[in-house]
Image 1 (cartoon, one colour):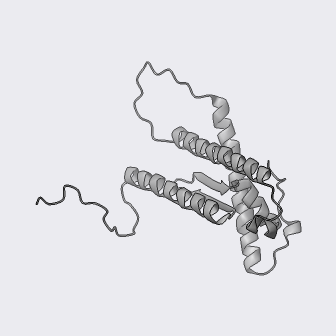
Image 2 (tube, one colour; image 1 turned 60 degrees about the horizontal axis):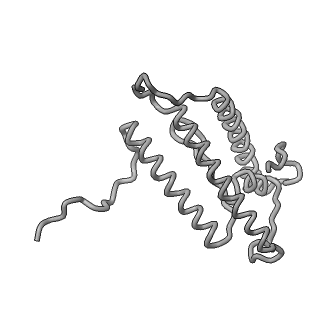
Image 3 (cartoon, rainbow, N blue to C red; image 1 turned 90 degrees about the vertical axis):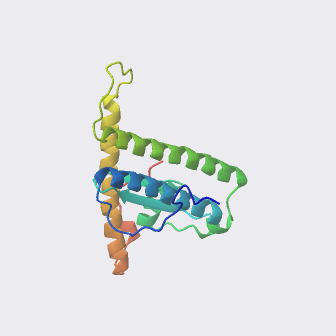
Length: 180
């Protein structure tokens, strides 16, 4: 009987990855793993989840079910719909529509994250016959989206701090209109 050809799954020390390229790969893989777990939590338990992650270079990445905007607005305004937890008060057609919206929003968030990563990735040599061009409008949209996420992040931090101190007033919070 021969020894194993690969090391298999190894336990690693949890410390900062030193090499920048390795750190970016680790971040990407673990971020996708977190998105998977959040999606499973949402599907299995019917929970609304929202996650905002800033990479080491300051790039925002979001995941939300039904969407990050909906979860952030719900948190900021204190809108808690208890009937939806047990599926009460929701028709099957509205649940199907919500599921379809969730898939589209998740795809959109993933596309935005990929576009942002691509736009800010280290430059690699490109063949001179490259046929794809980047639309400058996409970069402007990404900048606007980044600014919106950063504003949400600041407001979420303020609201979380106020809630932890018992001074949170949902009606006075959020200058953001519901996004939809």
